[in-house]
Image (cartoon, rainbow, N blue to C red; front, side):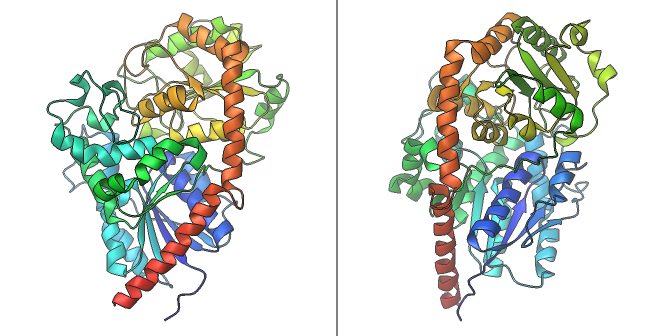
Length: 487
């Protein structure tokens, strides 16, 4: 039986903006550029944020891309500890959603031709086998993270004791070694459930027919070559690695709002530092005060998307509260130094709790981004030609920050990790001035403009990422024929 040209892809997203955006954008690209029909199944966070809802209801979703919200799973019988980390909660939510996902697929009018899950959804790959369709894992991060992730089951066997207690870096075949202080949060405590889940996910990725990665060839050519080395692929993965990025949410022209747009339009070109920690990042009260003083001392223009501080001094963000109202101006001002908003009113703007980050980054007046280095935010920054001050908080952000500062050349960062100790106001002021007005910042800005051009070329028709997705479609059709012949 001949397979029709238009393939129907089913994509599954885990909860949270950091996972939802890349999945929806991959679906959009499959539909718009490669003749797919696509259905994205979304597992909402326990209290879906304003920003999540906007993406799900977006009028910019094309006709052949359908977004379907699965019911939130009941976790009461899952034996989840009240102290479970965000990562563990996400994994368990995905696990408990399997019956609902199976039911939703069974109710579809047309059977899917391919299944794509994000990296939290590897336990759903077996559903691809049940349906008799090709199945892929989408890792919405970079090649260095993917290589270290795939290598984790090997490290689990080889390394004794805690990873962070080691003094030497961890060797990853063909890749930049990973320093103990840069390992992902999930590897910080081997007795924690999230570590066991992390190792399991890494071991399940090879069950797929290939891996989609949200980067482009020129960004990490050497690491991609190492990933594709026969020895690496044969031992730690299976199937090709397709570079499909950078995939980011399109900017909505109306997203800024009248007052914010008027303020931005008054500022000189590349003169404003955006301070934002993504959809779930928060700081301690002490760090928040130091950051405020640092911005004021720098005497540079800024926009700060401000959230209430965490209770603990170092936390893994407000993931499940992201995008919800987090206090008005008066409440948030109480966490800032006395008189801060009055003294900085001519150069700074504080946005309470949430702001349209992608739209702000796209404005010509923005010339720097103090960022948590989540991969979505990193790609938004590069695609707008904006250099970064790397301020990693949790998850794989330390790895991203090291990549950006030491290998890609798109960022500078504090001497000590902000996730480990409080960065002082003088250092913050120096970082901001370096990025915005000093020669070192100009060199990084020029490098990011190069990366911006390279990224735009990669996703354009005929570019490396465009061709990689085209190759994935051809491979997918071949795999479908193999499966059909076998049955």
